[in-house]
Length: 295
Image (tube, rainbow, N blue to C red; front, top):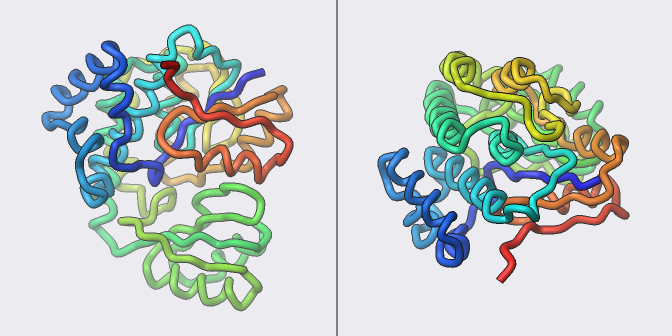
């Protein structure tokens, strides 16, 4: 069974999507539609902007979404998933690619999500850190004992867990996790504490928008971040999208469940190859591919 996976924030690079725009009339049409809908030429920032341009949350999230979704659409008949999943933001790309969510509605939600998350970041100094080489339970227990908001945010692969919380909490947790034997406790250059309780204002703001968006059953199961389990029911998918902002991304468990349910290969659709690497760390023998436009 073919699993298709969609990357999240951090996969962006200057020049992303330019080949699609130049080689496919459908891609060009969709990029121009996105420029009009967003009110600025995001395609110019993607193709020839600066790295700093692409790091802005209100650009990063729609840029990655557009690259992933447009690539899936351009693949046409070659895009035949038996199951899909997306890492954080990538869940929205997966839903559009799996025909549960329309292109324009998906882009509007992603833009609203990015703006809501940016505002939440500005309310309180917060950060994230990657913890390498410790069991999940050890990281969870140490974070729980810190007298600040610090939680597990991204279960990326065995031995790699990203934590999220207040700046002070991340500092204390990194120090204690290093003492506990972490190979690395690396603070990330991000704007805030994604997938933590500090994103509650963003969740409150986005809840109504998600509830009012037309979502139908996808063409195949989507394995959602909050539980790592497969869903096809539209109302449940909506609720999981809302919960996702303050809940951890259970990527390790997602890949494990997809493999247990019969996945024989994983194809990453979008910029970069981070997710392929994470799949290999969950199951070394698994075949992974990068989706690309046939020329």
